[in-house]
Amino acid sequence: MSALTQKTLQEITEKNIQPISRWQIETKNNVYWVGTLFLVVFSALATAVSFHAIFEIDWQAYQKAHFSWIEMLLSGVPIFSLLLLASFLWGSVFFLQHTRRGYRYPIGVLFGVFFFSSVSLGYFIEESPLNDPAERFLLQSLPHIEKLPVSLFPTTKQQWSQPERGLLGGVVLQSDEKSIELLDSAQKTWTVEYTGAEVSDDTKLQIDDEVKIIGSQSDEDTFHATEIQKWENSHRQEEDSDEEHVESKRSSEESEDDSQEEDDHEEEQDEHEEDEQDDHEEDETDS
Image 1 (cartoon, rainbow, N blue to C red):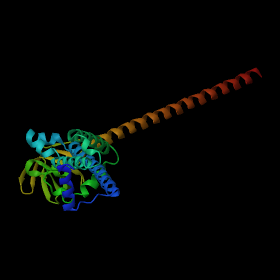
Image 2 (cartoon, one colour):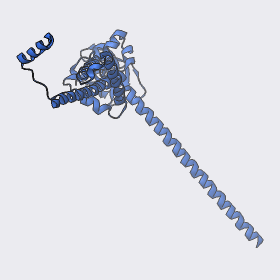
Image 3 (spheres, rainbow, N blue to C red):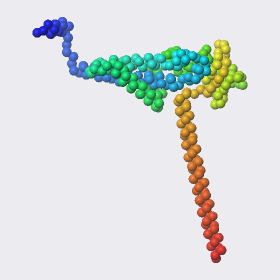
Image 4 (cartoon, rainbow, N blue to C red):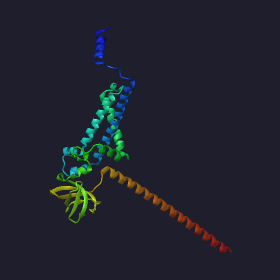
């Protein structure tokens, strides 16, 4: 008996090491696989939230409010959800490497595969009807996420809750020719002076209208506006507007076709009646 074998047997005896049953090995393997799948799904959700934040942020508003490029990136890039994505990807790799054959695959390859899968599935979620319920599920799983600073987790509501930086949004309470009273997302009332401000054509400043305002804070509850826009979520509303435009155009074309068919039918009827009348007159002449 070799020295190594003797040493191994001695260690087994001293530590009272017992063989692990097959069902325990299978259970452990299955748990790691299930954990891997769950973490991949959560990675996709974190990716979808990141896409949602990037798509919904009004980047032009940052430029109009004179943010530098560094400030725009720090304010608009969803750092928190990207950190979540990195954590979930690391967890996926860790779990898979502890499966029966997972140790065979290089860490870099696993990261690449999981990252590509998360981005693909996340983009599909963002562009599908699953978008809102999936993101609500992830955000509700993380309590107090809305209290995070805009630099960590930007949302449209947080973006337009920076009056000190020139961005203010909320609901119109009342308005006149020179100013409006606005209730922001923090339930604070503002007096917004908009004399000389550029107001978009689709913005009526009526009571209960939601608006976004670019300008400067005058004092604690007064804001001077240079531009006022109707509140809308960029790419989602643009898609809805495009769909409505296409649908409207299609309906208009269909109604025009129907109208044309009706006109053609009426013309055929008139021609038929004229032919019958002419035949009747000829018969009377012959008789």
